[in-house]
Amino acid sequence: MATVTRREAGKLILAGAAGALVPGRASARPMIDSVVHGVQIGAQSYSFRDRDLDAAIQAYVECGLGECELYQGHLEPRVEGRRGQNELAKLRDWRLKTPLSFFEGVRKKFDDAGILLYAYNYSFSKFMSDSEIARGFEMAQAMGVKYITASSQVSVAHKVDIYAQKYKIMVGFHGHDNTRNPDEFSTPDTFARAMAGASPYIGVNLDIGHFTAAGGDAVAYLREHHDKIVTLHIKDRKKNHGANLPFGQGDTPIAEVLRLLRDQQWKIPANIEYEYGEEIKGLDTVAEVRKCFAYCKQALET
Image (cartoon, rainbow, N blue to C red; front, side):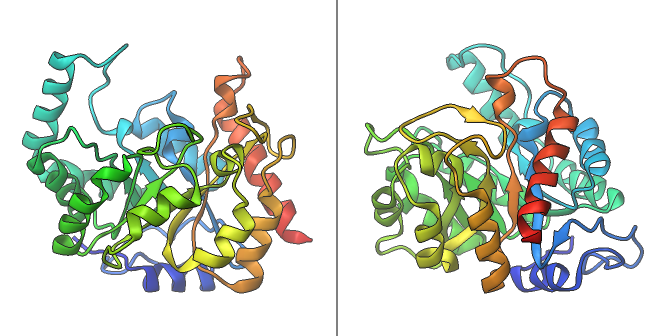
């Protein structure tokens, strides 16, 4: 299974993905080009959480998005309601026993659709066994990705780093806006604590919407730590733990972040994460993601 390194992905971004082939494939559909002025615009597949994997891939095609950060919920069995011990045991069993050929097949689906599978979202937890943590890296390896994004606890970062070094897969920890819990990623300090003394394989998946809601300055953080950022999540939220809103209606500096990527030529994928549908009911997911993409393209034109 071929892997795509950040350098190779950067070349795709520089060239524009249309007509380029994923490295290591003898024959493949041309990649969907969603590079705008040198900035790779993609999506976290959580944006399409209202549909299964095959339908989510088709949504990427319909939206014209050529890069994916794959949400683990698109692969794992669904657990309705709160996860009790029985549900967690079943989920753990699935993770440990699902053949790696399944994940190789997932990668092929994206290849066949012309979509760059860039990162896998596998949220490590301090309650996971060592085997379950290691399995996340094996899944990513089978899918040929060099990056994992993870909503996790700060206290699990050291253990994750051990496996990240072993598998040579970089982990970007994802923050939310829960600033009251010091073990949750949210502020610059929480990311700094995870990276203190860690190997180069520990980094950040910066969600600029949640970061803004938590009181952070996404533009300043990107300037200072761009070399440690695996991917960006692009969404719009109000400050002070405010609501998710359609792009342009919140306080998140989406346009400024995208222009900084463009002007500095930092090859960090900017992944739309459509989330305001949770708060504004009755919206069509594909139509809204298209609007988000259009907003990003317009921002990069000025």
